[in-house]
Image 1 (tube, helix red, strand yellow):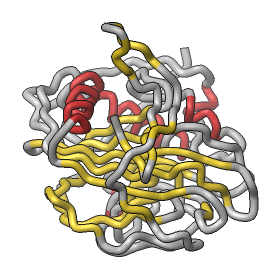
Image 2: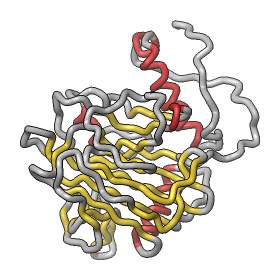
Image 3: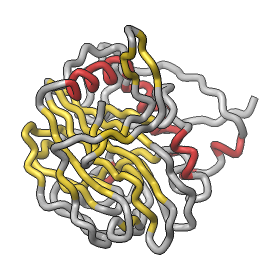
Length: 291
């Protein structure tokens, strides 16, 4: 169960009622303990000291910033509201739950909380083991950042989502969980990027404001509204090489654009990481054959 400022946002959360488990939609339940970002256009939290270091593609961080415009950064806050196009080949690591021009000064709550014990860790352990079945994982730390009913700049349309960081032992993961995400004409993007873009990922369709509401129904772990990524330095695989991989695309046009090809390769890579492929592995398309 992942919490939010004064609220709990439960995205397809399972409750136990009368001995049975009932799945419900997104609900608002009072909760305590979250720190709320100030209501300011293009603002950020102060530096948040992490109670447990977080490993992100080989770099270890002990602080983080929750930026109002829908992203997390580690070394410094970021006020930028127009998203970079991933890969940006920039100089900082960034996690973009939904990077766009958001305005909590007008309406909505942006908050965060970290956990080192309790039911949140139990929930995180269950989720990661379900999403990455070839791992045996136990969460020791969880950080939850929530954007609850925050409006786009100069509009009245509301958007809700969470970014959850989870770690334990030498493993690190990110969950991106989406509630109602309104369409917009503003530039948008969801995913992550690393220093010099050695690793990056763009959620399919998230860089198109007219399609952004599909985040509620899409997933890479067969749980609508949820995207899960392993983001540590990756495990050591007993197999040195991947001999072959076959995929089916809906259209040949999916592989005629170089940007689309890179997104497809990143999606394939994240799927293979679940089964032991090191995150540091670089995938390249060597041959395209139309059958």
